Structure formats: structure tokens, C-alpha cells
Amino acid sequence: MKKMCLALTFLILAAGVAAAQKTFFNKEYKVGFKYPATVKLTKSENEPEENFKNLTGVSVIHPGRNIGGATATLAANKITRAACKELPQASVESPVRLKKFGSNTFYRATEMDGGMESVQQFEFYRTYHSGTCYEVRIQVGMAKNRPTNDLSAFSKLYTILRTMYFRK
Image 1 (cartoon, rainbow, N blue to C red):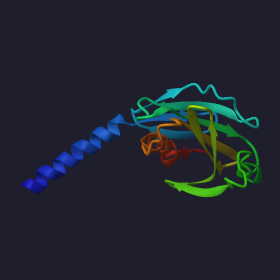
Image 2: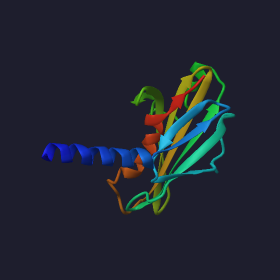
Image 3: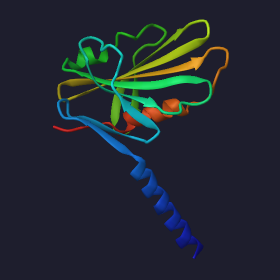
Image 4: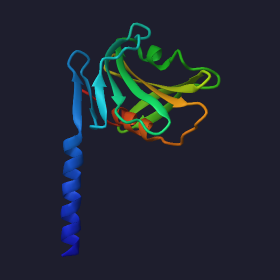
């Protein structure tokens, strides 16, 4: 009986998590992702880089303690695979590395930018599918004097990378 109740509880919880997931899909670039209710879609205010077209942005509703904001922008550009791999943000300190999320492999670079009271951590991810380069730019702002080990804002934004899919 306990096993049956436990299984039923698990099914109810799983159904609740699935119901809380929403879906974004861009018809022009045939890319989509699922996102939890803890983030909201936004129009990206960031300027697109290298003629990339911003498709959408997301922001974390409650990013966490000592985190000033957490956003991600999805952009696309029809460029070559070689050009897609060359992230302009890459440097000697942060070379391009491969990172796998879900079934997709991304080229990744990071960057930090700080002022007197806060620091911004940027992560740039690109993947190439069917002649199009897709870029996800993640930005998390943190208080400089109050370091945080709260990675939940990043985790919520990584949902986009884990659930990205492409249609022909």
C-alpha cells in the first residue's frame, strides 16, 4: 500500500511540474524551448551582436539572495559553422569550450564585468543547426561585497539550453 501511495504521489508531482512548463517557439528560425513558471518571457533589450536577430529574452522572477537580476537572450543568425564557433567574447582567460546541455552541444565562453558595488557574470553559448547559428546570452548580476553561492538563477536559465529543440 505504501508503494502505491508513493507512486501516486510521484505521478501527481510529475504532472504538476509538467503543467508548470511553458513553451516558446519561433516559426521563422524554427527553434523552441521549454521554460518553468519561475521565469517570464521578455523582449530582449540587449543589442544583438554580429547581425544576430534577438528572438526572445527571459528573466528569472525571483533570482535569489544577493542577485540583482538574471536574464537570458536567445538570438539567431544565418552564418557558417566556423563563424558560429568563433565567439567574440572568448579570450585567453576564457577560451571557447564545448558544453553539453540535453541533446545539444554548445560552444561556450564566459566574461565578468564589475563596478564598485556589483559584478555581472556573462555566459555565451552558441550551437549550429541547419545553416543557422543560435546564441543564448546569460547575464546574472550579483552584489560584489556579498558573494553568493546561490546558483539557482543560473540553473533556471540553463533550462533553456537543456530543452532547446529545432524543427525543419
